[in-house]
Length: 500
Image 1: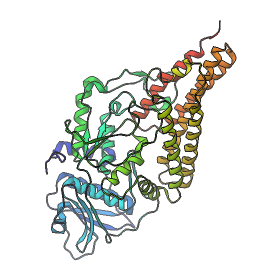
Image 2: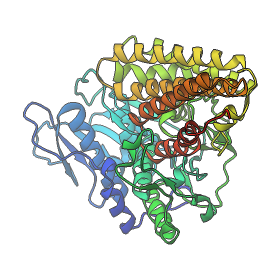
Image 3: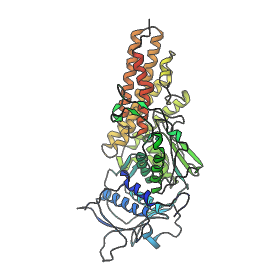
Image 4: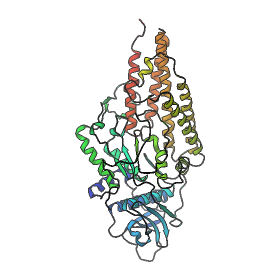
């Protein structure tokens, strides 16, 4: 099927999808104790449906240790091997009113039907099957359920119909702390995860210049240096490589059934974060819009709860942000984790509202983002200490959730715990920088040096903590920027003598 939102799949594009590591199904090895399953794809499956079959085999291996055989038709030898009818192979078992994006996971006397009204919808049906068995899809990868599900192909009756025709992802290109700094291969991996969340369009930057920024030196005494893997600078995609970068991203998207038309204009753009950029974690309140939408976000790792909500609410009007968080956390973390997560994100919502009210430009990436607090000798605003208290509460709740999770998806929770700890140290650094400025004004060299050293130490700690969970070039870009705009300038100030 070829349409505005389901472009024809070219063979060369499909090859790219199979080359993307996160999209590859695990190797099929013989399962000693797991079930044997036959997946029927028909005589000439669409390439995207063949990919869906491989993804289904990988899911069944992960969830049930199943030995999966993908075949054109049932064996017909009279055996009772569990059978899945995938995509077009389901034939007359599909509902007559199945739309292009509709998909079903339904048990029948002939086998489990996992199919959609188009090849890409069949792929979504596969991911829906995984979701029904506890698999959760995050931007960084997949998390299986904490408790292994029992294998069965009966009892399914899932029908999904979209509430929006288009659900787009915008590749934000706005400096180092954005996806404009990502290699094409990393973006391809992200798109593979977004496909599991049923996003069906990708919007690339319209202006190649948006990918450009001044390289940042990441050698010498800097915080969080380990994330740069020995590189001498953090640099954008080279200008001569931008056409190839675009072509690779487009090919990866289209191989997943995603539209990439640059003229695509969604009805609503959901900005998940601060419009002028951010380095601190913030709460992102989102209500699913009535019509088509596009998501725009610079930092990706902070967004899994809201992306999960959007991915479920786009197909089910009963889903709320609160219920979506529970549906995300409980299967992969266990019982009792949602409550502290709720409290942690509530504290984050409070500090976000406080920041927006008192200082909308606070911690927005810019050369003076930190130095402005050291240039002024005015008393520190009250909201800084209140913000530290709220970030501290968020840290405590995230670690409480992490302790309750014990295993499973602890890396996901730890990301939020470390990000909030980073914010706490950043605010401590800002406070110390202001105290140093006040001491400088009072010509108190000892207090000036002491507080400047505290600011430097807090910045170094903040960057080191962030580095522990930095997962992509947006995270690395934040660390590079804060070294350039905060850590290095403070070290230079320490070499000065404020009093003559």
